[in-house]
Length: 536
DNA sequence: TTAGGGTTAG
Image 1: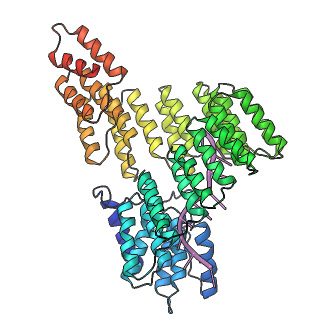
Image 2 (image 1 turned 135 degrees about the vertical axis):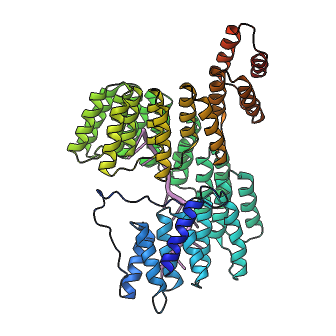
Image 3 (image 1 turned 90 degrees about the vertical axis):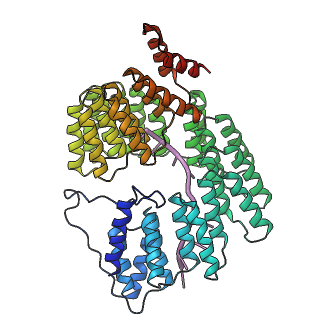
């Protein structure tokens, strides 16, 4: 059975992915919680071809509800006689891609090739995009060979995918070169989507000035930017903290008679709030209303967040009242922001009151909300309460994230329970969650502070073996841990490694070194050498 | 009647 072999392949790749770095990891959903999913939904292959077509059209647009549905359908389609068309299979693939299950889409494609299911340029472009999303640009490019071998001619979509591949690897010059080469050779005529893709890619990666140059290039090529194009650039500048640049682009679009919309204004308001330009925030809100553009829940949430960050929770609540009056009802983001504000002030009663309000409005906390509350309790050293909340989360069917475990690990370390922290660290991996560099930093720091420096050193090694590259923070943690535990030679080796990567000792590491130097009776030669290196 | 893209909030 194709489905059985596919499932086997999926499980193989899933277990192998932690060891083999050349294959992208799978992101399969863990076993569903029996409480939240009492009856597994078993999809049935539609009997009539038209029903199948309608189902595929729907799924290609909105994605499948469950991965299993897509796999069952795929299996069923393989056994139909006559076999559905390449368009049908492409739509199924599109549905899987829409679920962001890129690894699965790639495996389905491989299965199609093995079983001689016809594929076309659409199929290959789609898979190319998946490789790009999986950050395997090399595989993405290798598919170009498959296109030629099959006698297809790569089109604007294929090349747009390749340009996106370059952008995802921050290879801006390569992206530009490929783009220009294609135009020069008249291989493709870039469309408005290609330009959007490039401009969005550049802005999301903090290259707004390059994006503006691309905007000019787009205009010169006769492709007129619209509100979305301008909004992407404005948001990019605001996120970089360059509000004046954003304002210039905003003025330019008005001069060109391109009307800003609620997204453009929301981005501008966000940028102005982050820069504490409150007068301008007021002016921008007024202008927006004068232009007959109604602020939406995003816009209000930006204001709620700004007030909360400024410690003005009462003003934030006033905004929520306005939202209710205007029919822009507060959502999970609004309430989580408020919960965060109470938690950051240590007012757990206030936070719990917000949760009650949410429940009365049938808005239920998600992992983000739970994480905020658990973090606050951990910081108050009430890890016991945080653990109760963790249990509650499971009961409600809310999946813990890497951040959830990080918060609990931090909590355990704060109360000196490194063994429990390590147990939770293994538990998260058993649940299919891959620790990130932050997780390791939390644990390394905790172990070092709880006199478990030897375990920390082993863990550092495990981290490197798992392909995680330590950053400046990680090195500083381990150096300080070694110093605290009088492992000066080890500290020195890590300090040299840091220097190889051009990382500097931070203020805490330097001051610890100085403290140790002044307190050592004889003065340690290694410490002297380390201190000198840290000053260079 | 299939593939790439569509921007804003915790």
